[in-house]
Amino acid sequence: MTKTVSDLLQGLPYPVSGSPDVEVKDIVFDSRQVRAGSLFVAFKGSHVDGHQFIPAAILKGATSVLCANAPANTSATVIQVADPLGALAAISIRFWDNPSRELRMVGITGTNGKTTTSFIIESIFREAGIPTGVMGTINYRFGNEAVPAPNTTPFASDLQRFLSQIVRGGGQACVMEVSSHALALGRVEGVEFDVGVFTNLTQDHLDFHKTLDAYGEAKTRLFSTLDPDSRKTFPRVAVINMDDPWGGKMRSSSRVPVLGYRLHGPADVYAKHIQSDANGSRFEIHGPGVQFPVRLPLLGEYNVMNALASAAVGLSQKIAPDIIVKGLENIPAVPGRMEKVQAGQPFTVVVDYAHTDDALRQVLTALRRLKPRKLITIFGCGGDRDRTKRPFMGEAAAALSDDVIVTSDNPRSEDPARITLDVEVGVRRVRTDHYRIIVDRKQAIAEGFQMAQEGDIVLIAGKGHENYQILADRTIPFDDRQVARELLVASTKSGEI
Image 1 (cartoon, rainbow, N blue to C red):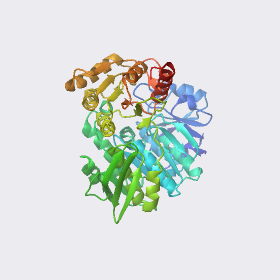
Image 2: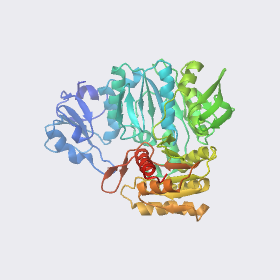
Image 3: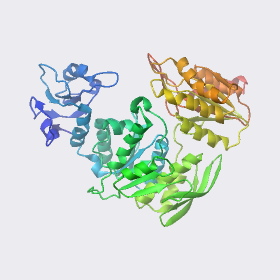
Image 4: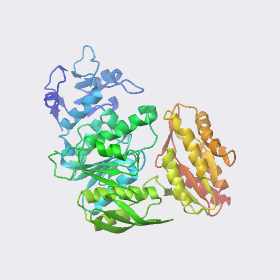
C-alpha cells in the first residue's frame, strides 16, 4: 500500500511543508514501529507527548510527519494541524481505501456486554456463511489470525489497517466493540457502520468523562452517525436495549430504523419462558413476525439480554431464524466471561471480567441462582480509574456474597492498599464481618480456595481474560485462570483439597 501525501490530503484543508509528492507506505503513531516511508503521527497523550519522538522517527525512516508543533529544520514533509488525532481518521481512511465501505459493519457500545455480544454475533454470522472479523477487548481477529488488543477500539490508523486486512482476506463483515473513549476521541470517525448496538449504560470511566451524562452522550454518537443515505446495500438499523434508562436517548439519536429489545417485552425483540440452570438458559425469542426456541449455553439473564441483542442484529440483516438459533446455541466459551476453572476440586471456580458494580451484581445474581452452599467473591478495583465506583462494587459484593476477599486488580500508579480501603467503605455499608482484605492477588485467591468446601462457588472477578497485572513500575504476567489452576493443582497434590 503506497500513497503520496498529496493523495492523502486531497480535499482536506491541512497545510503542508515540504514536498507533497513524498510517498507514504504506512501510518504509525509509535516511533518504534516506524519503517522507511512511514507517516509518523505525533500527538500529546495523557502521559507522553509524541512530538518528542519526531526526530527518532525521522532517523528510522519516516518521510512525513502529522503533528501540531512542527519541528525545526527537518527533511521530512510536515502536515501541521491543531488536532493530529482528529486528522488521523480522515487520512487513514484515504490511505487504506475506505475499507468499511466494503464490509457489513456492526458497532456495539455500552458499559457491559460488548464482548459477549460480539462473540454471539460473530457466531451467528459464521453460521450464515459471512466471513467476519472482530475488534474488541480480548483481541482483533479474522480467520485463523488474532492479535492482542491494546485498546478495546484501536486508534484510527490501526483500525483502518485491520479493516483493510479483512477486506483483502475475503472478509464480508466486521463486528466492533466501540468504546466511549473511541467515540469521544474520534477513532471511529468516518467508519460506515450499518448496525449500531446499545447494550446498557452504568457508571464507569468517569475518570475520563467526568460525568455520567458526558459518558452517555459519547455513546449516542454511534447512533447519530448511522447514515440512512449510505450507498452501501446492507440494512442500516439501530439495535437498542429499551430496558435501560438511556435506551430512549439512543433511540432519539438514531437517524435509521430502530429495533428495540427488552428481556420480557413489549418490544420489537423480547424473550418468553426463560428457564436457567447451571448449563445456561432456555427461552423463546419473539421478533417481528417470528418466534423460535433457543438453548443458550451461557449463564445469567444478562446473557439472555446479550442473546436478544445479537438475535436482533441477525434479524435486521435478514438472517433466517434457524441460522440465528444455530449461532446462539453454538457460541463458544467467551474468554474470561463466566469461565470455569476445573482441576478436580470439589467446588466451582469461575473467572469473570466484571469490573463495574452493575456487572458484578449481574454475575453474582446469576451464580446465586445456582444455589451454592456458599458464594465466595474475590475482586479488586483498578488504579488510575474512576474512584467513585469502588465503594459501589464493595456494596454489590457484600450484599450478594457469603464471604468477600478484597484484593488488588491493576493498581497502576496508585497504592493498592489504598484502593482496597476505598472498596472497604462500600463493604462496611452492608456488613462488618465475613470479609477480609488481602492485597496480594495470588494470596487472596489461595485463601479463597482454602475457605471453599464442596458445593461452594468461588468467583474471581475484575480481570477476566487479562494475562497481566499493571503495577506502578512494571507490568507482570498474571492470569487469574492460570493462577487459579496452578493453586488448585498444587492443593490437590498436597491433599489440602
